[in-house]
Image (cartoon, rainbow, N blue to C red; front, side, top):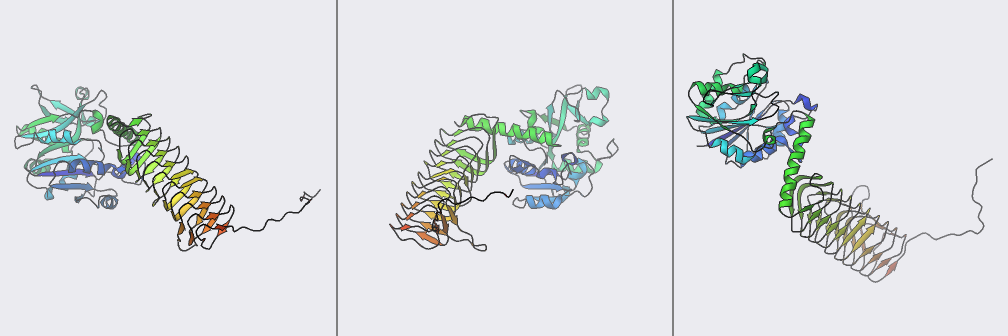
Length: 453
């Protein structure tokens, strides 16, 4: 049978206290609804429908790279009403209903649920909670079969004592769904069309409601406020940390790492506390990441050491590199083998050759450094003239004295030496010395100015 997935993503999420649609709030660097879509795509879906409402255009834009069909719920009249907006576009096979604010649902759980579905069975995902407050309760008959879901606000005292709860996630055939949706009623405390009412309709027809439960309750927890968001963030990061350690990564503290994208690690990688990895990051064998580093969309080769509080963004490190502490490698930075970038150094669109070092307090932008270049403290490449960027080329084995300004476009030759404190605006030939500084003046016994009495 074919499979349609309907993801409900129309809610405003007023308790988030945000103008951003709830499903676009980010968990581990990715909008909630994209977590759900990525899981659903692993089910070999034929058609995916996203029901939008509040902030619908923003949701469309955020999902522009997905092959999805959008249905609009202009008025918020409940989950049954939301699914009905997509009903005409649903095919003839199975239908799975998911929620854009329930991001941790696992594919294996959904596969188990879908396995029950045929014309005589539908699937319902339930969860047993110690504190079921606010959840709809699963009502079972004397034989133990699920026959209805009663919403918390509509439940009797006896029903409120039930600990098995509705997650909202269910699966059925398209024929069943299209037969039941027109029968939904808004005669309830919320005056809404509850999708959960189809459970009683199924039971009345003699269709068995097959239930499944997730491995962990956190898997089906939704996001309604910032506190829940934070709890799910830590839960997801905990799973990532466990996976990394299972692969041999040494984490100083599994509770203090954040991966907001993809992190691939070789053998014997060590990651200290407080590090954040964003986008696509790869760490080669033997890499050591010091505390409180931020690494984004970068490749760090084998045996590199990144010291504390460094930021690496869009950079490629070939291997055996030392970076930091307090270094910033901006997009386009490329370090050859054994190149070093030290404390309070910033690079941007810069190629640093094998064995070259920029150890202290420098800015190197739009530049190419050859092999074994030594850049002294306080050096800057003056790459921007207020309108355009210009390039600096520094040859192999050049020595740049401290506090030098290299005014691009400019070329420093092989084994050239730049005297400390120089401003260099013309090319320097190979093996030559260039000094460009103002003449020093000394006056003996010079009276220092003093304040007037």
